[in-house]
Length: 213
Ligand code: ATP
Ligand code: ZN
Image (tube, rainbow, N blue to C red):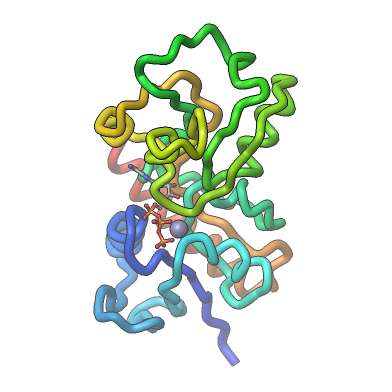
């Protein structure tokens, strides 16, 4: 039996369009945006699965998929033992701490004893521990930026790209704790035939990237 790479992509979100474009530029065709969960490429031994980004590292670890595209932020936060194959250069963003605009800031120590709302408890916890700051982390899954205005937290730790969401919620960015971009991840110890397909794909990705620089 000839092997087929199973590649997990975000179904719909900030990674989706650029992920699709990347494969398109690599000359790999498949149906996308049809609402289907799965699509088989017509000209490369690959099958694409469309999933929520947060679930992708777990599926890659479990072997449901061989490869996936996620933000580094999600890959690190989930802590799954997957291999980073390549950085892709899109969906660039940062994970930052922000506080209400009128609040004074003299440094990270200001967060001692404070409540911080975030969807990234592991990344934030690791950072605070490194800085020797003891704060209470409140994990919430969405709309993190409204937490200070409803009295849930004194600070937030959230994904920022332009900063306009922070601004419109009366917050200011005071510390960046992590910088992220989209990455290609793989199941560790792929079988030789699948690894050969990954190498072939990677060669095309690098050629596409080189042509752009
Ligand atoms: P899903 O429904 O699949 O769980 P989501 O809402 O968690 O989606 P998105 O907002 O689509 O996720 O973001 C996906 C990834 O894109 C993030 O994990 C991050 O790496 C990156 N990202 C997030 N916000 C931005 C942004 N404003 N600009 C660029 N990249 C971003
Ligand atoms: Zn998500």
